Image 1 (cartoon, rainbow, N blue to C red):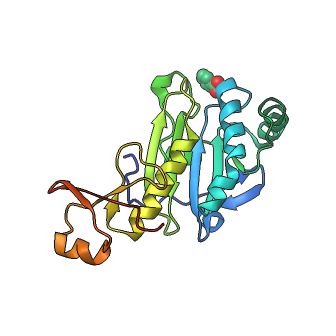
Image 2: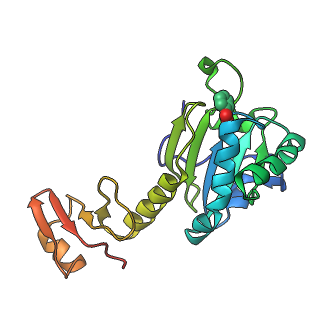
Length: 211
Ligand code: BEZ
């Protein structure tokens, strides 16, 4: 059965481009983004890893570690790194798991045989410091992901963990947020003393509380 939101992220030991890791120990007290790509020396993956490396500082600011995975070997990963830096203008600055025996790919259901081979599709798992899975997504091999969107989701989850709000469509840092419907107006007055706008009884908009 596939992993669901709130499940504990399966732990594992794996070889990476930065040495052997035990996943939960590697995460430590951080958040983590584990993402798979189909194969080394492929064009879309090259752009994805370059872009993620470019965004590493943004992940760091959110206390989120980044780790990639494919079923290729550490030697192949390392041989590919130069191409990523050369073509994307950014050196990879996070570990890449070499899942040659597909142990991790099976644990996280990253293999989709219907795709025609035994390589991983484009999965993303956001994992919190309690090692709980907070977000998953799976894209087909042909569609490169938008890592700004992953950062946006981290912002939303970290904000809504601390306040009784939810974030509306296309929300980004600084935009107004929605007071969760199960909070009464009386309770909301305590938490949002500056007020809110009631568009419908279930749709109350207030400014982002942690700014
Ligand atoms: C790519 O990363 O470019 C790719 C990998 C597998 C299938 C299609 C594209």
